[in-house]
Length: 112
Image (cartoon, rainbow, N blue to C red):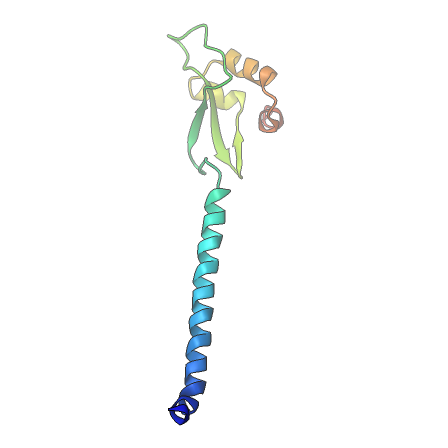
């Protein structure tokens, strides 16, 4: 029996090494996928968003939509007065949101 095992050992060793390498690669890919999904932004490129939290109600609900309109681009949620007006939002709600907001994105993109 030992002679038989000795004769096939090189093939068995390659099989075992290959098996562990494949298992390690699959495990690595799974861990990488989990990490990417964990840190993934809740926003997606090309979609429009309405920020409701932290905004005041419009004084003219028959004329304007509620909230602040935003879009997602370059891994950042962006807002602008022009975009707000174009989407039917109240410019005063936008301006009050900027004054109350302490987010960097709102301050950086207010001139966009």
